[in-house]
Image (cartoon, rainbow, N blue to C red):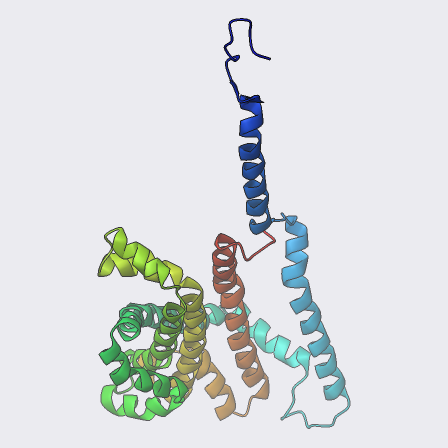
Length: 309
């Protein structure tokens, strides 16, 4: 009501109080907050023991099933002993190289070569992928070549590398590079192609050009595709290394997993052959579980795509 002097009370305009006028604004803010809450992923914390069971129990169960089937096939004598060893014979071969300590030098020789070759491949493939993705002339000239090299079996490069570099580590690294660089570069190209155009535009508005654009805009935005290319590049690098170590053998190259496997085949030791195959498989699974899977989970979590931690 108006006061006796004819003035309206403070905070009242045309019969509407200040609280009434601000009520719609509060409702709008609540509605926007509700929409934001719908877009925000709910991250559920998983206890460590559940994560352990979820990560390690299924592979262990599958491994136990495979060993059980293997034992049953061996016991049935469908295949002779020199073609299919028993799990216990392969276990004895494992125990022998663990007891004499040679397993660590064998693993170190191969894993160190693969890691060094993969790091060099990253250093080469990352700028190459950026050039192919952002320079049309480079893409037209090199893009089909990268795709062709990715489909070319790396073992095809081993004879040529032996003729060029001899039985040296250069041969091994050359084959590893040619096996991994195309996959990493193509993964980065695919990731950059999927970057929304608004992100580079925003980067240019903020003054990012050249290296800054690649470092702060393109690479972070293309990280999922880049990481997928790195995973595939590591797989190709590991396979290329095994092929090179099996074919190119010599005293200067030392004893890696590929040479260990080949030595078993040369003396018809099927237990050593199976032990070498299993060691190669174990390293591949270990790198996936200890390196790439945590990286992938972290990238997905940063983008709100991993709902469990």
